[in-house]
Length: 358
Ligand code: ADP
Ligand code: GN1
Ligand code: MG
Image 1 (cartoon, rainbow, N blue to C red):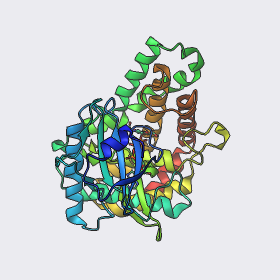
Image 2 (cartoon, rainbow, N blue to C red):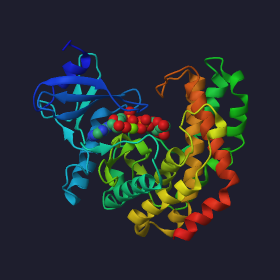
Image 3 (cartoon, rainbow, N blue to C red):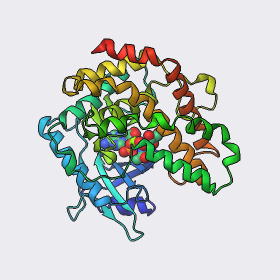
């Protein structure tokens, strides 16, 4: 095989057999992911970690090591927890001559990674997986985790970043997004609701995943059951409502995150309910009543926040989220704002459905 930075990196890890294939894999927006296959058909995930997004990779890998060891203690099935493969020097990452950071995970075989749920059962299972993940970490000291991206889900601080991007307008794109900016600005007040409750001590700071998209969980290929939560880069102190909400914004939408035909984008209440059932079954008993009541607000906040993050990145020239076409981040922003509006229109139903499950 021709020598590439990926293969050179792969050779630094403790793999079983020689690499025979290394291909780009998955649909993540942040890291570069490759599927590695060796001569004896052992599969691995090789990732180039985005160190412009994650500034302290050793600390990030330290978090993942500690969290996965904690999870594996409870449940020794190797397909239930992400497994880090060490380098030949016994480190959990490799830094190459270019300064790029690499890591390897065991590939979870016979698993499904979905971009949208095939039906309510898939989404129930993903809710169960993320709920179980959070529940198993209730005894883990949140304060001991490195904050891999400070203020990651601090929505008011995201609003401030948008305001700066609007004021600077470095790419001259502001004239294209006046409506979106107005939409965002009209909602700045609501954006701080969860943080205000957290400051008042009504919401508990927990160990949360913080990036609970459907494609960050693996289901069993045969049974469709919750298997393994992946993409642990943002496991940090956070709010239960954020983990609930980020899943809803992605998986309970009737269209893809980057759909251009906005008439296709809406919130599916049956999907919302299915996720809530799975999530509450796994972690409902460990949440306080105030946390449970704010789960719908988490859905609104995560959708709004993701929309303004896409908008900010569009204004800044697509420096954060990987794009695959021109105006991709603007398309993504528009789907999120369409969902936000739909959630506002159906707010009473969202609250009622959740309360009926308690
Ligand atoms: P990103 O941060 O860029 O989203 P992820 O860690 O989510 O990167 O990985 C991207 C994709 O690679 C996932 O959505 C999933 O399809 C696949 N993947 C990652 N880790 C594993 C694993 N251990 N086993 C199987 N597939 C995986
Ligand atoms: C990114 O890494 P990935 O693709 O799973 C982002 C999330 C966003 C999501 C939007 C570290 O997730 O916060 O919600 O894109 N991750 C990071 O699809 O910023
Ligand atoms: Mg991911």
